[in-house]
Amino acid sequence: MFARTPSNLTRTLTRQFANSSRTSLGSNVRQIRPFFSVIAKPAVKASSICKRYASSTTPHSTASDPAEVEAMDCLEQGTRLLEEGDVEGAKRLYARSAEINRNASSLYNLGVTYYHLKDFDAAISSWQESIALQPSSPDAHTNLANAYILSPIPRPDLALHHLRIACSLAPEDPEIAFNLAAVLEATENLEESLEYYKKCEAYGIDRAKMHIRNVTAKLLALRMQSTGQSDQ
Image (cartoon, rainbow, N blue to C red; front, side, top):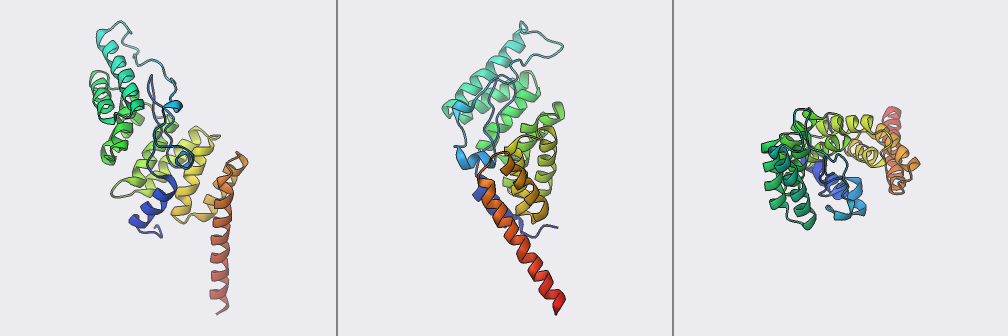
């Protein structure tokens, strides 16, 4: 189905996107974005942390529940360690939080640590479970797509599936649109890739202009080749 072999596809995407992922849900980490942001930022950047979903309590628990308190403490401590670069320490704390309260936030953050440790299968598993609990997170879908691309056996079909979902959940997010355009380009879906790059340009992403030129040139070459073959 895809013109590129998996290994070539991975090399192509890795050159553009490198090793990064969005983090996180809950009172945790967020905004370590895959693909596009790697062009501009390091993989982990403490200044990009924000408290998006501040509570890890459930409808059947309260913040005064000792187990819930421990789970939240583990999330917060894990985030501090991740900001400091202690990924292994963060992983242990996130795993403990997930053990106490297996919710989307703890699983999401656990996936982030696995991702940075290059355990892509474990990252995929964590993010799949996080999405099952909270399917409306565009960041989780975007990260999962990134892991599918960089895993030992790349699955660009699944990456595209989750990036499309992420785009539907956050249609005005230019970074997700850029990620989708890049994977579409790498898998030779050039017409659709060009469409998304143009959206990125409209969002103000200057780097999209170069990709628009490249994809336009590829399409022109394919059309000329097709015309030449039909003339023979």
